[in-house]
Image: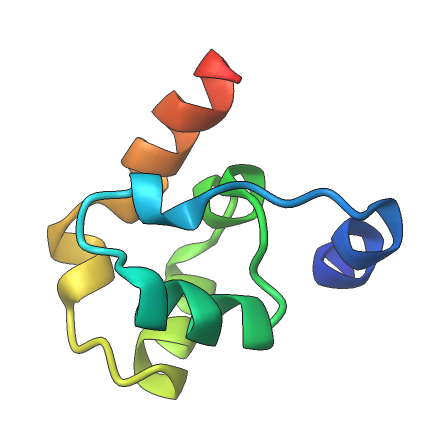
Length: 78
C-alpha cells in the first residue's frame, strides 16, 4: 500500500486531466489524496476505486468513465 508514498518519493507525476472526466479541481483533489500517476489509477482494485470514489464524492463517475482503462492506455503511451 504505499504506492502513493513511493510515487511521492520518486517525484513522478502525470497530467491527470488527460483522463476524460478529470478537470483541474478534481486533479488537485486526487493529488491531495496521493494519486499522482496514471499507473496508480490503472492499478486500483475495485475496493480502491470505491474508496476513492467515496472519499472524493465522485459517485460512479470514475467507474462509468473507465478511468482505470483510460489511465492504463495513457500510461502505455508515455
